[in-house]
Image (cartoon, rainbow, N blue to C red):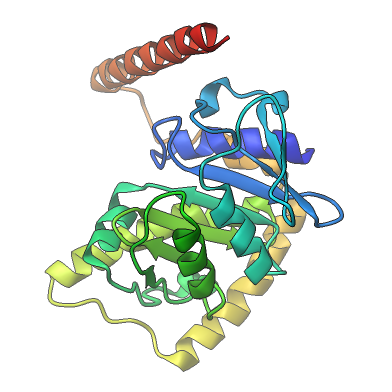
Length: 259
């Protein structure tokens, strides 16, 4: 799957996992050669994006090529790529649980084995959205021993060696935030020690490498079968489908007005 297709698929996955309402958050990938990135456009619904809607941004000049403006957080993505030469994908989302921890300005420790490859998830100091200050604050956090950071009173950012890894981590950060908050309510979240983290990281690095070799990117988007469908499921789906249709219709109208 080409990079453009991967970005489109990742956007749909963020909506499916409720990490985005369709327009919130942003996704980018480093292009071949490393000097430019492809990033999602500003204020465009992921469910309506096509490959030609993505914007190419030069990491040195900040110049953009495309039919739309790049995400307002393009500076953040650019600075993260500068700070992390190993990163080839960046995802920023506004997941509810991640944002809750970000509002509390806490650090999520490594709580479970499979989170070892992410590391502790710190909260970067507050800075206005889309600002150079925010880009600097987040990139500084990601220079540390972590592959994710929270943005104070804002959301989360993750990096990956490719978009599939970044997408897995984006979903995992939201799950870890939920675990952390519930554990705190139950008396305190207790993270793993350094020895356990190192052992888990070694195990899951090998495990995920084997998975990576066997899976195609679209496998992330396969529907999950959870058992028999009830009338309640159908009613709930109908409401969600109605809301989605209304959102898509609104965005189509806005696109027409924009043109």
